[in-house]
Image 1 (cartoon, rainbow, N blue to C red):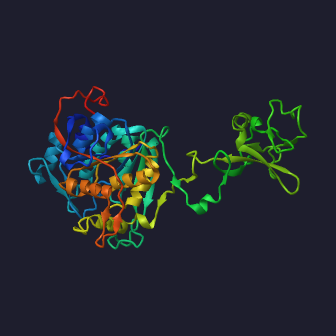
Image 2: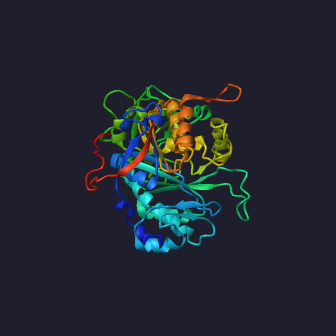
Image 3: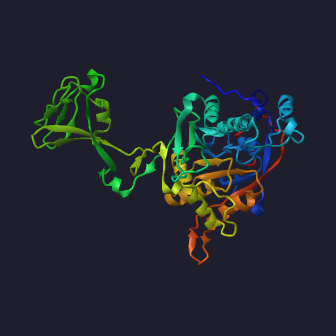
Length: 466
């Protein structure tokens, strides 16, 4: 399998293993109706590399859905690479631009900015993988500047077999004039599983117009699908008669003979026009015996009898639709995200001009965290859109999902946490009208403590006090 080579990779290859565990220190004065730490939403203020290692002590293998939007590394705006990696080789590389080997601002003039970006992402992706549940999934938003590098890194860390899809997300349908030669409308979102064989993905609810295409019985919604199937490899075990009684009851027998009692029965074989002798049923006899209520007969005007199966919704309740690989809604736009943020913070408009939209994050959570009690992590939390989306989705579907947000900048309290405080209680506009409905919820605000002497060989899921 091809792998990504970058300057500094050897130095940071195992950096995530050398980091010390740290305590999570709750701050009641900055929290909102805090609960026991193990049962609450969390907002962690601190470097996300150190925070992820701290969270590993409590949430290893427990996070169902991770969403991150790391720096896109466009070169237009500087981001700071400040991982304190002790490797002499790495420090020598950085020292000419670095203040005591601690910080460097990366911008478009830095010809090695892709290497530094990869050095920043590598240990974080390793820790994020360790936090994911076996059924979990990670979404990473990125644009063309690092999409190809990120894909190779994630193939190496998560495994190429655990790649699910590279979503095309359209946050700006009118197009950006910044892109050379074309008006850019899209970005990417890479999706990987911790274990694709066990991954648990949700689907989207359908609207009322689509719901009218479904039928309903005592069990619930279903769609009719012809049970016979041509064009597949012939299997003798799937070519058998189905007997239909006078009241359209379905009977399948072991010896392919009609039942001795009842009747008269009509014997129906799987015969398509092009393959009358080699057609098969899609269901085995055993499946019909196991689910007799999900197979039925329909009599046509010409007297023939057709056999159908009932295709139930995948979630067993209201029908849903599988998400498409092109993510586009008007509500996904950066403009919509900015309008929401300005409604929440009317006193400081424009400080974050391109935040992710709540609707985009809600749909990602719908897919990645379909369970009622799933935990969602965003370690590049920014303005807190992910936490907002989790609370809003919980209110809509009655779930009890929890979020963990990590933000290292000073606005972790004034923006990230304050947004959650405001939307939890509701936000009124200038005229007194409700601009954002109250969503409820709580969170514990935490800082990172000093390194601990925790033994990394001890199962980090066993943590006293949580």
